[in-house]
Image (cartoon, rainbow, N blue to C red):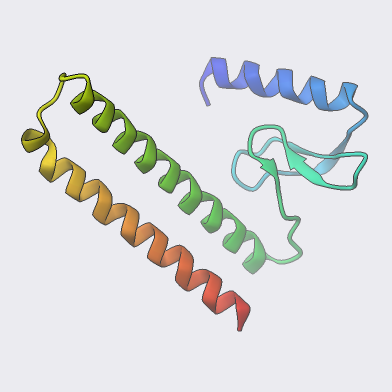
Length: 124
């Protein structure tokens, strides 16, 4: 986590406490920061927002996996958006970026397929 991100997280933690949230002993399985319980009863991470509190190691692994897949999907979307904007602005040529776009779209498809398979298997 960069110094900027740490500062942002600390600011968010202070905001949560000022709003009446209670800092819990449990930590976020992704970033390790303390979790907070809002007045509504919802459990949140100051960085990742709402989290699911897990009771077993298997549930923890599942939660981390879901978070990683969602983060990966977000990163791919941001990269695709950046490339499209560069094409629109004339900074990049569409034909020069076809391979990069195709690789990102293939990766996005795979991430979504894994997420879909996980959702399907969790319903059973």
